[in-house]
Image (cartoon, rainbow, N blue to C red; front, side, top):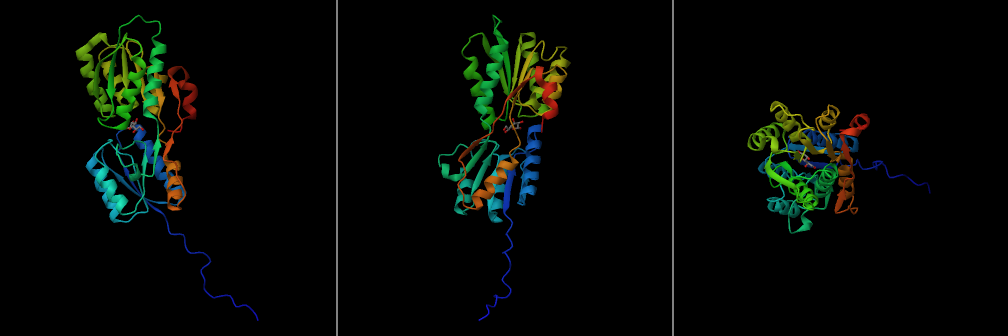
Length: 308
Ligand code: GZL
């Protein structure tokens, strides 16, 4: 008998679009805006519907955004936690709603590791060590004392805590290195300039080195150093982290000595992880971003290759 095809079976069920809720910290730095760009373009390329919330660097806004993603029953939640603590409750609510959570860029400090499926981002402690090693090498002929002022990132954030820890781990080997002032510039140019002005007033010509936890604060501090009639990268050696365009420009102008790379280009890795989680495939608990270090001597050669 002739087989009759069952009529009207749709050729393939229309793939339901994956919906990702992303809570971004803010737009505080060049790094952050490059990170946002990477996430938005990668979501588009991956055909993932992105619900994007900017928290203006306020934890309560991130918690609100995550709650709204839960209410909207998104498939996956991802976020970059502005600080390490205070997210436990809302992460439990996401778990109760059976919505997997992926951490990008910064980690959270929670006992129950089942509250998040994967954390992708840099090893900030190693970034601090790279900064320290570069300084030890740079100052190896100096008798000392080498007086360092430090512009810390956002208080309580993983990058600020770990970049400080890694840097101190390296310089403590030689007592000639002393951090004489350390204060947060909240990762912004404006605050970095303001705090550097205060450092210069307090310490004046005794400052030999500035260690900034990101390029934006270093760029703000460079303005303060010039306004004080000093030469950045000559009178005061300047080390910073991120390696954004602004840092390369400062290095090519001879105003910044070195920037440790911290890649914001996490979008593609995040979208792959989102797809794998939705498909029930295993996802690594920790994905570390590979990154280097760029002293001013290589800035002009490297600059054309930079993607952020
Ligand atoms: C690092 C990221 C930091 C950058 C800053 O991964 O969390 O936040 O170093 C940004 O520029 O503000």
